[in-house]
Image (cartoon, rainbow, N blue to C red; front, side, top):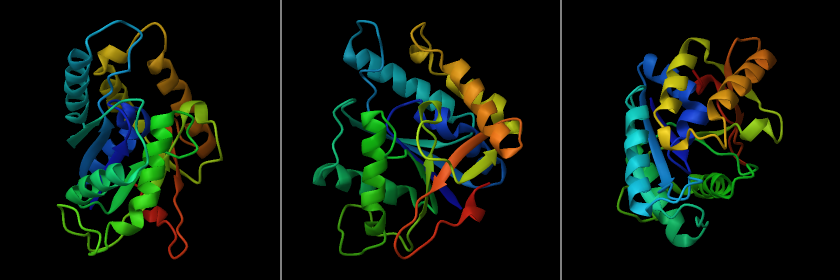
Length: 229
């Protein structure tokens, strides 16, 4: 099975579904990550845009190697991502290249504007992935993937409908986050959030650590929760 994490920024896959990606990989599935933006605004320091973009891509590749996962970078502008025709076509083409059976992506309820936009684009595009008459460079998929929406900052939003036990994978998730040195600043304690939210979701589900998801339901299909690891 092919599993694709569609995320807004370098580090989002590791924050929100790193344990799940590792668990999929351990079960023999093929894992990949699609990063929509270049991450150039992800700093409180004055730094050259291209220098930060290059650094964040290297950090994401290092983190992805721990699963392991292939990575696609679309390099759209961080903080200025829009759900428009051209962006949807880029995303459709990139998602098709990964041939996903399962997509993990942001919840459009997420308060981060790029997270919201990526989640909305995936939801708006999902029915077009298998349609032959939606013509981009990559041919249509054979079937429509199942989509699961990832958690949000501090779990703000509607209650998750599924939890993945990542107790055995949590240390890999932590190490993946630590690859993103440019983001580990005094302004935000990402490592502390990782620990607290992982334990909180685990407590809800009866595990030590867990990641939370919501199945995305379309009018003609229900999410298949058995596809989660």
